[in-house]
Image (cartoon, rainbow, N blue to C red):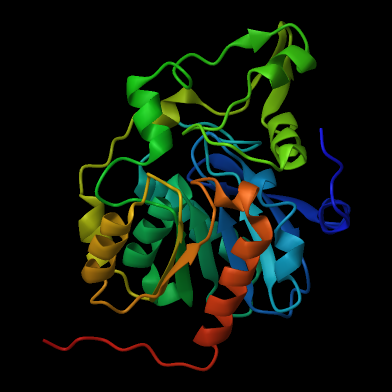
Length: 296
């Protein structure tokens, strides 16, 4: 395994608060960094992931923001539900933001499945959000984690392994992709597992992939009520250029699309600093520009 660079070790050594808030009878766990007197920023993970996918990135954003990252229900260290409608995950985002005590409406950043949930939040609760950044999340087809959960075996029946090392050997990114930052993959993998009587198993609930929403994602995206920005990975088949263009049209051609060079779908792992630069650029632009809206 390659040696982690200083920026990474400094980030994971940064202190954060472990917090929990109850949403519709379910405990929702989240992490918090930074000055509570700064504007709020919420980070939302993808399917089968968790808040610690952001631990090495969140400190890069605390110069200007009070940052939180949540475990959506059925993920990480949050509780489980019988069903997981995206509308309820969107509610969890907003209640975490309320519990964090942000000084104003937050910006929400969501990757993959988390980006789709962020779109739902921007549609249902956009008047309570300053903006939404959608990270390699497709609207035209299922997100990659749900697609694998429905068709493949990777997420269907999470196995239990005798020891941690064996479990770590079975951690794979979905969809599959190369990632030269093996120290990051190892970091998130170790925080994807929990100890049970029989050994080690994955934290996520496989039921999160049994989608219960019937409203098309295109409807939510076309009816967002806050500023929206999009980030896509150059080498991702999940959001090819034509899908990004379709989403751009749904947003009245009023949302910047930033492409991260030489990045695959899990761009926050394989190009983390380029991703942070893109987020900072979008947020900086929003501080001094006014969105254009088509009137007819």
